[in-house]
Image 1 (cartoon, rainbow, N blue to C red):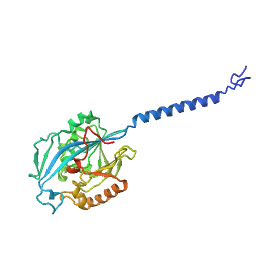
Image 2 (image 1 turned 90 degrees about the horizontal axis):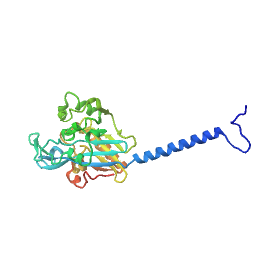
Image 3 (image 1 turned 180 degrees about the vertical axis):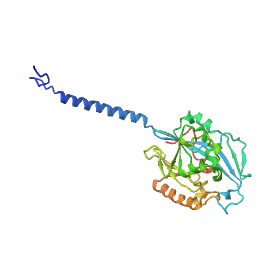
Image 4 (image 1 turned 90 degrees about the vertical axis):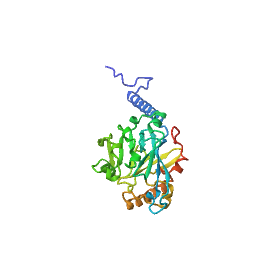
Length: 296
């Protein structure tokens, strides 16, 4: 019986070599297809900024004890959406959309809070459903940062472990938290972290530990291809003057921890060449473009 796999005169037929060549071709094709898929999915990261209410402080010395006593100051509330190739992160949720434009009084008139444009309407404007958001990062659980948290029931919540224990414990109000503003969030969907956290695993969106304002306060660092690195402050500072003079609000959870957070975050800002956005700073915020515009 003739072995049909043997080389015949005038031919160079080698099945093993052919199989090897075919395998290389298939692997090459898979590699090319994979690269094409990656290219399609790797759109530049976008950052949207939203108007999430206004705050009037009737005595700004609450934020800087012994300084500017009895003076009023206008603050803003900001929220942020990061659209990354691997998902979406929403940062802070602002004052509740239920607040009226004329405002309400809080803390015996120490503050007036108002909302003139709802967060939900701004999300609708860019075609984003809160239920589609993958991750919710909250700098801390004061009510002006959790006001619309109940919109994000499908999101994995990423917070420091100390904040998780305080916010979902039996004495949340003791820390100045408002559980009714986030009562729809399931604790089973809350990830308590201890330190910094790389949200998408590529070093471009990092939640950074900065405790002191509350037990588990944190800030957000985002590195954008065109804009460059940004540090979004939470309530590390409330306005530029407090950053300049390193003043600690009278109602902070821990002054020593706050001062340590000042030092660690400022060192990181310097190391990375980042621009800091102070979330409540009205004057700085006026220079920042808001949704539907975006940064990338």
